[in-house]
Image: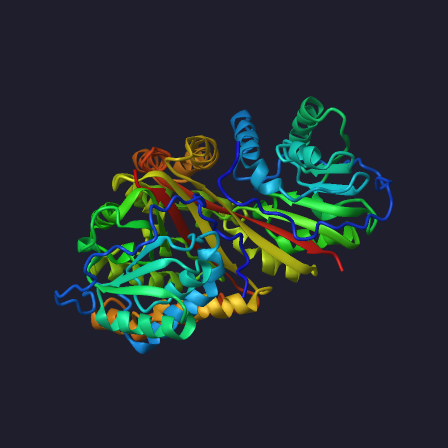
Amino acid sequence: MTTETAACNDQHPTDRRSDDQYPTDDRVDDRPAGPGPGYVHGYSETEARRLGDQADTLAELLHAGTAYPAGSRVLEAGCGVGAQTVHLLTASPGVLLTAADVSADSLAQARDRVAAQAPAAQVAWHHGDLHRLPFPEGSFDHVFVCFVLEHLADPVAALTALRRVLRPGGTITAIEGDHGSAFFHPQSPAARSAIDLLVRLQAEAGGDALLGRRLYPLLTEAGFRDVAVRPCPVYADGARPALAEGFTLRTFVAMVEAVRPEALAAGLTTPAAFDQGVADLRRAAEPGGTFHYTFFKAVAVSP
Amino acid sequence: MTTETAACNDQHPTDRRSDDQYPTDDRVDDRPAGPGPGYVHGYSETEARRLGDQADTLAELLHAGTAYPAGSRVLEAGCGVGAQTVHLLTASPGVLLTAADVSADSLAQARDRVAAQAPAAQVAWHHGDLHRLPFPEGSFDHVFVCFVLEHLADPVAALTALRRVLRPGGTITAIEGDHGSAFFHPQSPAARSAIDLLVRLQAEAGGDALLGRRLYPLLTEAGFRDVAVRPCPVYADGARPALAEGFTLRTFVAMVEAVRPEALAAGLTTPAAFDQGVADLRRAAEPGGTFHYTFFKAVAVSP
């Protein structure tokens, strides 16, 4: 499917890779590394499916222009269930990808997904925390990090750790959403409140669902140069029923709905109020409704 | 200057104009037509300058792809002080433009601006209400309406009236902002409140500062077909100081600031609270800040 928006191309298409080898360090991290405690979306099968739907719907928008030369040493930091990994590999055949995640379960799902959808790809799977990657300085030509920083308590520390494993002149590509960018017709205070609950729960879990707007200052503070950030809008209206279904309903509304149990358990809302918010949000996907959301894609260079 | 975003091209570049003549009707509207009572931004010199700044900063973004063939009969409905008119004429030299506005003062300023900036242009100036244009049905090949619908009590009625003067197969291009699309870093409840005041005052004046998100359903309801709406994001960060100055400060913050007297007179805020909001909003234009806003550009066809 096509998203009705200009693709967000990377700013630094040229590439000087330094060699054709994987980083040769140990890929095994033997610290216990179960699901991250602060991952607001959870690790359910439903959530894995939502992430897959989201990635497929948005692949053209988010991955356009991100094509690394064959042989490049690429690190995907926080690959999760591999939802973005398969699109990265499709756009950049022949890269030497290292995919890292803190969740062993997610990593296993990512491995299965890549085996099914990109069987020819060369991927080294690394189970570990992106703040403490065991690779030497300058191990990678490129780092790709998508929908990860929003879940971290200290994104500058994470970005600084990623900069360490990038060679000088290597690039980082960071993609994040920003739930404060969501607006829709018909308007609804109940729908806005439901979104605000997701933002609040993510904040209480140590993350920031409004991180997209901060990519520029965060990357700058982490010591990157030539930071170039682009907004990637997704807009669905009555002329775009597939996008209303694939993005508004199956990506965004599904993400809001998924925090219902947690929001109710915390006493932050009532079933009636939350369900009204979700029902109102669904109206934005009907023929007379509209829904707008902005992702941000940043590319920056390691000095 | 370039805006850091993909230009929002029109969807219907092809054009079948039916003849090379102006509509031959009377251009003079002898009803009293002073400043529209519901124009929230007022008619001051400062405001005229703000509109000029805004139009110049955004010209590339908003006018890209809107190029009418020479000889086309084009109506600009609600030309105001001519801020967009000069860009329309630059992008479409040789069109037969009729520029209409309800304010005689604005029309005089528009005439001066066009004389100075596009002296070769052929423009018929029409003083009157766009709901009651005296032109026969099908008088125009194209209608252009920018930042006008947001100020009207019944935009569907206005669009229906404009459809009447479009020939079958002719196109309308409508551009609107949406103040609910504004978000920024650092976040600030005071800044959000100041923006909300602008939205509220515009609503009390009979308009809708959140109209952008409604363009698709409004055009559809007014009987247009092939309605195609695109978001046109404006995003300024530390890498884009000229845009932070030209858009964040001189366009958006200036627009918010302009409602200060009215908001205070209505008792909706205090000087301290309002000024804090404006000061916070200005921080979004500093090197560590970011500011994001979305315009919407629609193109639709008269059946």
